[in-house]
Image 1 (cartoon, rainbow, N blue to C red):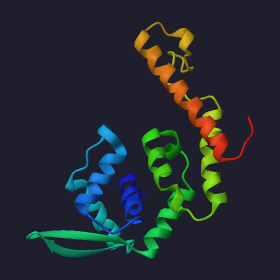
Image 2 (image 1 turned 30 degrees about the vertical axis):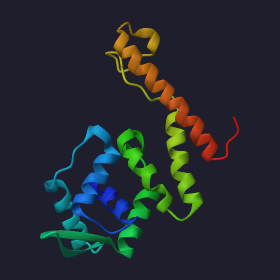
Image 3 (image 1 turned 135 degrees about the vertical axis):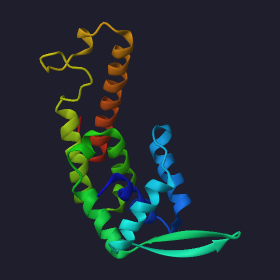
Length: 176
């Protein structure tokens, strides 16, 4: 399932929405990093309608035709399965991980939710989360970098990872 499809199913799990509302919600979730066009939204909703995961109705409001999308039970099942099995790049890429966290409460079983959080925890606590590497492919620590801006990136990243690990330990009921 694409990230766009996951966001569409996730937001539709909250309420029926038109394409414009979906686009705005998706842009808010991704922040300034990504804008979505109708050319991205409507092909994805078309695929989801064709797959029976969402339904579409047209509505006229203020003289304009709107496409209203509703999550179908099969769509909820597909979303839950995609969230439960999140791993790999969806866990390592922060933007994708943010989407998983946004909709993880849709997964009904706490053990399944905790398993996803545990995979992210294991990834972050493994210590192999770096920005810069030497020519031989080994990670560079902040002590090996002279550029103050790259050092800043590493310092902010390390603080974020530390804060997320603290949060994950709390969510998973792990002691310090």
